[in-house]
Every structure is written in C-alpha cells, then in structure tokens.
Image (cartoon, rainbow, N blue to C red; front, side, top):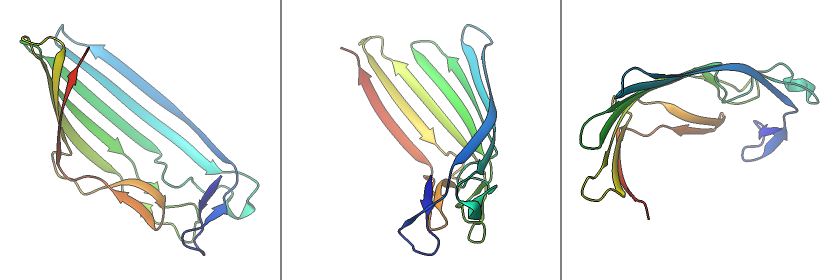
Length: 164
C-alpha cells in the first residue's frame, strides 16, 4: 500500500502491507407497522505490517477505531415517510507517518429526510434530505496530513424518481 510522502508533497511512498481487523454489529428492528430502526456499531483495529519497517505497527491513517450510526424511519399516511439519522465517526490519524501525523477529531452528524410516493402518480417518488442539520464543522475524509476534506455544512438535497 502507498500513502502520501511527507518529504515530497504530491508524491507517494511505499507504506507496506496493511491489516484491518474488526467487528461490526448491525441491528434492524420493526417496532410497529410504521416505525423501524437500523443501528450499526463498528470497531476496527488497523495497523501497518511489512515490508516497510519504518511504519510497522502504525495505525492506518484515516481509519477510525470506532464508528456508529442509528436510523429511525416512520411511515405516515398518504405515502409519506420521515427519517432521522445520527452518524458518529471516531478520531482518526491524518496520515501514516508517525512524526507528521496529527489526530483528526471525530464527529457526530444529524440528518433528516422525507419521501413521498405521490398517490396521483404512483410511479413518482419525491425525496428531500437535510444533511448536517446542526451545521457541525467536521473533517469528512483524511488522505494525508495535507489532503483533508471538510464535511458539508447544512445541506438540502431534493430529488425525484419516476419508475418506468
């Protein structure tokens, strides 16, 4: 595996082999005919193996030890569905070179969504998603200490699906 080279910005260096082991627990529940939930918990143990001795036993950059998500969904009348999601991503390293790495804080994001299958056009479904409703500032992606992607601020997305 390669990673961003800290001594030559814009280039890659040989990182070695990587091992990622972990556990994931998924739970789905149907509480009532209208209310359901899905939950996910993930623990990862990532480390760099051989052949690059310089980085052996370093934690893999951009990989959180812990992440979790919970989604609740409610089916209302007239083809309306409402949902809420909580997503948590734990702390991550910014790269794979110990002396250059920093820890990137984890984050928790709250999203809301709704959909409507129109009764007058049963093949048409309208969707609205409100992502990051608390307008949390967070780091979404970590590729190296100099390649970090921030998450979107509060964002409304609307789309339509027409099934032929």
